[in-house]
Every structure is written in C-alpha cells, then in structure tokens.
Length: 488
Image 1 (cartoon, one colour):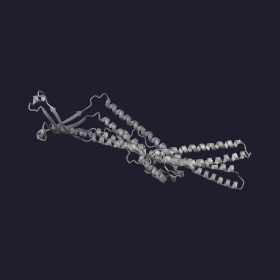
Image 2 (cartoon, one colour):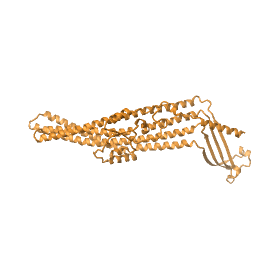
Image 3 (tube, one colour):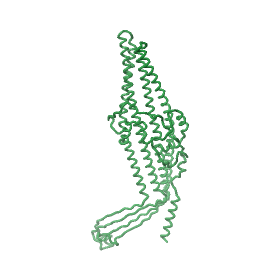
Image 4 (cartoon, helix red, strand yellow):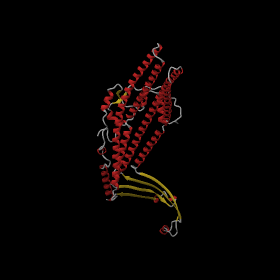
C-alpha cells in the first residue's frame, strides 16, 4: 500500500508538470513587440532612379561584388587574424560549453567514490565498547556509487537549458555582427586609402600648376611687367597646396595603419596597395520584401531576439521556485575493515534518500525575483523595438544617401568632361596666340579641383555601397525567429 501511494503521488506530479508551462507564452512575449517598419515608399522612390535594381540579398562574401583581388586578400587575412574576431569566437565557444553544463542538470548524475580511512581506535572508546573484537588499528575501505537526481516537474532545468541555448544563439549572432563590422571597416579603409592615394597625386599636380603660376609671376616682376601683389597671392596659394599635400599624406598613412590593424598586422607593415580603384556595381541591389525579411537578415537584430528569448526562459526558472523541489539521492557500495572481505556479499551497503522541499515563507524574495526577471525581459524587448526602428531608419537613410551620391557623381563626371574639353580648346587658342599661359594654368587648376570633387563623390559611392550592404546584414540569414516574424 505504501509503495502504491508513492507511485500515485509520483504519477500525479508528473501529470501536473505536463500541464504547467511557467515560461511566458508567445502572446505574452509579443505583447510589447512592434512589427518591422515599412520601407515601401523609400524603396519605390529609389527604384525610380537608374541607380537601383531589385535583386537578392547580399552574399556571405559580399565584397566579391567589387571583383578586386587585393580586397579579397585583405578580407581573408582579417577573418583569420583580427583579434576582435578571435575573441568573439572564444566567447561563442564559452556559451556553447555553458549550454552543455546547463543540459547536464536534466540528467541523473552518477559518481564513484573510493577511500581507505586508516584509524587508530581508542581501547576505551565507543567503537571498542560496542565491539571489543575490533582491532586497535584498522583501515576502513569504502567503495560506493552515488546517484542523485532532481525531478524537473516544473521545467526549471529545461528552462535553464533553453536560456543557455538562447544566450549561445545570441553570441553566435553577435559573432556574425562583429564579422560584418570588421569586414565593412576593412572595405571602407581600403577604399579610403585608394581614393586618398589618387587625391595625393591630384594635389601634387595642383601644386605643380600653382608653382608654374608663381614662377611666371616672378618672371613678370623681374621684367617690371607686374607688381609684387600677384607674386604674394600666388605664393600664398602655392603654400596652401603644399599644406594640402601634407594633410593628404597624413590621411594616407593613417589609412594604412588602420587597415593593418584591422587585418591583424602591426601598423607599419607594407601593404603594396596601388591607386587604381576597383569597379563599382552597375546598380545597387534592393532585395524583394525588404521590410518583411529585414529582421532575419540582420545579425544585431537576431542577437537581441535571442537575448529576449533567453530572458523569457529565465522568467520560467524564477516561477519554478514557487513549487516544491523533489530529488532522490542513493548510495550503493562496499565497506570493510579488511580488503580480503571487501567483495563479499556481507560487505554491501546502500541507502536511498528522497527529499521534498516546499517554500512556505520567503519574505517576498521569489516574487521579487520573478518581477526582476520580467523587468529585464521587458527592457530587452524595448531595446529590440528601438533597434528595429533604428535599423529601418538606417536602411532608409542609406537608400536616400546612395541615390543622392550616385546622382551627384554622374553629374560631376559630366562636369569634369566639360572642363577637360574647355582646357583642350584653350590649349588650341594658346597655340594660335589667342590665350596665354595664365589662362592655361587657371583652367588646369579648375580641372584638377573638379577632379578632386569627383573623386570625393566616387569614394562616397563606395562608402554608400558598403554601408548599404552592412545595413542589409552582409549575407547573414537566420531561418528561425523565436518570438515573431516582424509582425504582431
């Protein structure tokens, strides 16, 4: 009868545990969740221009769109050597091992213990009084198997495990975000270095033109054909151009230092990068269903979703503290004063210790812990809402920026062509005695200034392309959304 009663209690508890779900439901989790904002109007306006087209999401090795071997090599080195990436990889490994530790709490644990306790017994002590035949000096040999298991009726340890899995998934998404940040930073530094190398050449050309003007003004002064005022002015302008060379050379060196650090090198390692710019994509690709799929394509958003999911399971862990803990410990082994008798049947020993613990009065600590976990969950959910809004804004802003930059650069290219044509006509006029060197130099300076403006806009195109790829997740994709798919 006693065994039957215990069996009925155990079955009742098992049935009750199957009916309880202490983790917040999907409706509770999504209560304060906002849907992914629509980007349809911004996308429609962008597609009305010749600079955008509808296509697929970026690929994992998104930098291949630039078809540049130097950039590919830098990316491979960054992925292999960047210390920040190496650090986040170890953090992911730590999270995986933490998940294994949490999973271990779901299973019964079994330990083997062996000891040999040498003792000298008092002749007048308790043991000799109870058994005068005990030797004064003896070694108690003990070999036991210890078993312990806590029944997870309230899914406490399952929720601990699920929370650990959520943190592991969050770390994996964070790793993808760090990879995206590093690779886009490498691309930006690479394009900045190349454009600054081109600008340095243009500044040197500008300095040479202004030096020619300065020398011509000095010649006129020497022959009493001009005053000192034009000489002073041309000297000032020449010195300004020499300052620009110092400034751009500083930028070039800083770009090299940054690029070296991003790929895991010391700042002074030679890079061997030339001034030739790689080709830009013919159009910037906007994925179909941008608003709907943005959530699953951005690793920072998915990392936050997994943090929210982990905190939801921590609420379930906290709620389980209201219910009783039921566990079983057991020992089975051999014990003897003499090794020769250790494996006899008479040396067997064992015990079983079921335990039941129910909180009666905890001064509100359990409810406070639940409320604390709920507050952390809500805060993480609101952080997600903030992040999804800023992510949508980032994409929208970049579509507008790219549209403007590409439009300006296409016009600036025409402007440079017109300036070059005017310079060519002016040279013909000079050859026929209709214009002088000052007009030639002035047009040369004007062409160089327009080329400098053009190279700045070209760099803006590279920057907008890279940033848009980053805003679209840089090839990241998740197939599983724990609490929502962008809609309530």
